[in-house]
Amino acid sequence: MSKVITLSNAKIYQQTQLVLDNVWLSVEQGEFAYLVGKTGSGKSSLLKTLYAEIPLKEGEGIVTDYNLRRITKKETPFLRRKIGIIFQDFQLLMDRTVIQNMYFVLGATGWKDKEKIHNRALSVLQLVGIEQKAAVFPHALSGGEQQRVSIARALLNKPQLILADEPTGNLDIETSEEIMQLLLALAKEENTAILMASHDTSIIQKFPGRIVKIEGGELKESE
Image (cartoon, rainbow, N blue to C red; front, side, top):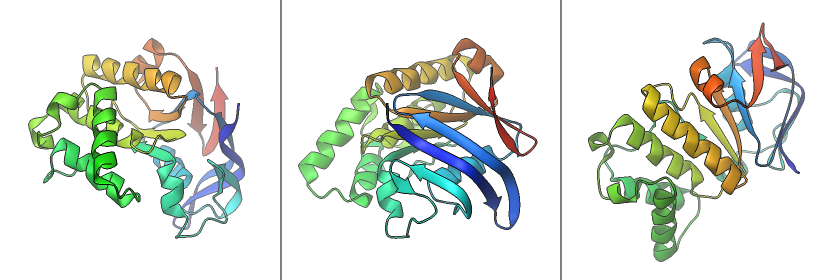
């Protein structure tokens, strides 16, 4: 199995403040792992470092073959094409329909052919079971439906890695479980690695997996 994330002796900074020290982490293709820790412990900072929103200043980091220490501004969009990002608050464009949200991302990541764009947009909406809402604006959708749309968006470029930042944080229990089943199925069927930040213990108990824990500014594997 090839590794999609390798961090060795990395230090994660939020501006000048050291948030996480001595970070060692590896995630393999198709693997599902939880990133757990208290609010403010550095989960989001770690995820942002992995998609090059926060620069890695010390240590080593390779994500989908891109070196985080050496990555240039020009290369960053190419790294992000290989990563799908799912946010707690969905971050959909409210002035566009569901399918137009897909078109926008595909256009922004270099797709040119309108027919291919349309077909890919439709196929990811089908994959997450929301194609019947393609012409609807996001504000008319439930929270669970909006999160399905944001998962569809994350899948557009067939990523090797999905980074999910509290994807069930704004959802009720039943909808959270549906979203988890969907994510786990995707990891298996698409062979996509998923690193999911969460502090929802009920979800972690119901859907057990590898747990990487942030404690006292360090990363630890949890049994």
